[in-house]
Image (cartoon, rainbow, N blue to C red; front, top):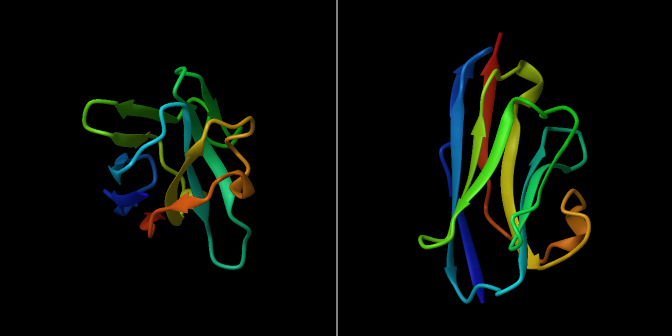
Length: 123
């Protein structure tokens, strides 16, 4: 069974940067998808960025050019580098994983989730 633990959230000024990390422990899939999602109060959970075991990446339009998803396979760590942060990026950020799937922006495709890390961006 896979466990995911996120870290790196916090507060930042608009235009600033944060890097989120997600450590995967336990059994991990050979062919997998991993993704970052976020959920702001009163809003639905939305996909932010995804990556699969073939190296393909996918981004929400709202973060393209600002956020970068990457991974350290040896350490089993997923990253989300967030630059040029905006107040609209304020949310709880979650990482998720499952066997490889089409659609890394879709929450229902993922069965394993971390506990989340809060990101707050002030103007």
